[in-house]
Amino acid sequence: MSRRWWLALLPVLALVCCVTGLAAGALAFSPLRERVLALLGLRPQILAAEMVPDDAILYASLSYNLQAQPGYETIRRAYLENPEVQRVLKEWKDQLREEAEIDFDADIAPWIGPEIGLALFPASPEALEEGRLPLVLLVASRDHSKADAFLERLRQLAEKEGRRVEDRAHRGRSYQLWISEGPQNPPLAIGRLGEFVVVAVTEEAFQRVADRAAGEGQPIATSPRFRKVIQALPAQSVMMFYLDYQAMQKLSREALPRLQPGAPDLESLLGPQSQIIQAIEGAGFAVELQAQGLRLQSIMVIDRAKVPQDLRASLDAPPISEALLGRIPENAFGFLHSARIGGSLRRSLEILRRNPEARRQLQDMEAALGIRLEEDLLAWMTGDLILAALPAPAGAPSEIPVGVSLWIGTDQPEAARAGLARLEDALAMMGVQVEESTRVGQAVRIVIAPTGERILAYTVDPEAMQMVFPADAFEGYYKPARAITGNPRFRDIRSQLPAQISSLFFLDTFALWDLIEEQIPGAEGATFREKVRPFLDPIRGIGIAGEATTGAEIQRGVLFIRIAPPGS
Image (cartoon, rainbow, N blue to C red; front, side, top):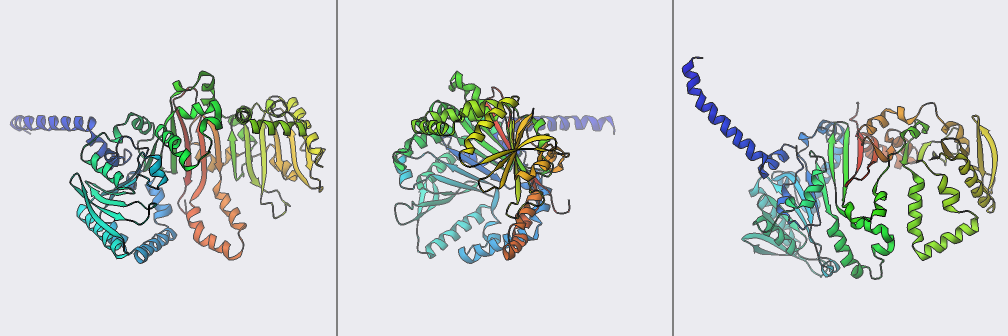
């Protein structure tokens, strides 16, 4: 290319660079950036939040721009192409057409946009008592003329059913007001405000959205509390939820005396612990579609400065001891794992004992049984608790489909044996006997019911107290050769949870669905297999974990559902 061409192109290239730079700057520092990123699926769809006043108590947003999600192919193959799912969707559309005279494909699909928002506004106790809940639904429109035609169609159907529909206007925006009979059925306001079709349970709620659409006040999207919650959640999600916890508490305090006279307040129920609840500023969750399944992250934002110094330690969540997972057999259907169970139970007892009646009942129970809960039982519970559901041992009665094993970690085995011996003495007063046995080289105590049935077996070793049901399952449940940590579905789920966790729940649904089907007899079992299993079979496992934190303002929990398409 000649020098003359380069000289001619230089001004054009300079202009392109300037325009590109200005555009990039505008996107980086303006709401348009959020809109573009949301449409690309790189931010939560919270465009409707611009229409919601900043004092909303809760706000939720659903985006069905699934193609932008990393896990879209997984969901498509597992469900969207599932013949049974398609059949259910067709039945739903047919029912909507027959009962409501609405054709989804003709009346709704042509205009509905990529986002749905839901908001709840503050309300007086009187309004709640009268059933006037200021709830608003916002549905994005991508074809306004077709959206308006749908609203007119709704009006015709309402009038056909004998409902009175009035035309109203607010700030130059027209809407329909559906008049209902009776004070418990407030008018329903429906109309299109800009890019959204708005359905409000009260006329006042609709007008508040119309005010916001006209530029009055500030949107919830600019609320510092809202932004703190949203920024702590994953940026790429299909659904998000926000709760202004302080506003919800205020509404509850004002409304509860009228809705439930005589109901105890939070302070009388929890005592000083109620100050932790009052320090929660906001909460929220977001749902992501990952390549391996669906993940939900939930958070709470806590103002630790509002929590008394002596209670702040209770906000910390210590990590579980994952070494104890090696005690769970690989074929477990599921388990619950909680860190430092003794301390948690002691705090619960402290709260109970603040109630005079509960304190009296606990004292009476301890006196009758001859045990002291804190000294004889909780003191030696220095480790974690695990409760697992396992396949029933061979030869177990058919009415026992699963076995159960309980582990409580301890570094005080002698204190544990002494405390459990006192518990055995208390059970003896009820006719329950305990005998000594040896299984797999371990001293085991067998608990025998008054009927002579061997119901439980337990042992204490240097690591934990383990109790199993039924008693004959002890050999299979004690220190298995293959542990849950080798289960591939557990490993998949554990990789999606926080690195440090304070609690863990796992369900191996791959094996569980077969067990459930075996328990359903005859035709009901066939119906379960044909109608329900197609929805359940792609779900291979479920995990829930709380993040271990110390001194953190944000507390986080994660739920992950492992989804595998058929044939994968």
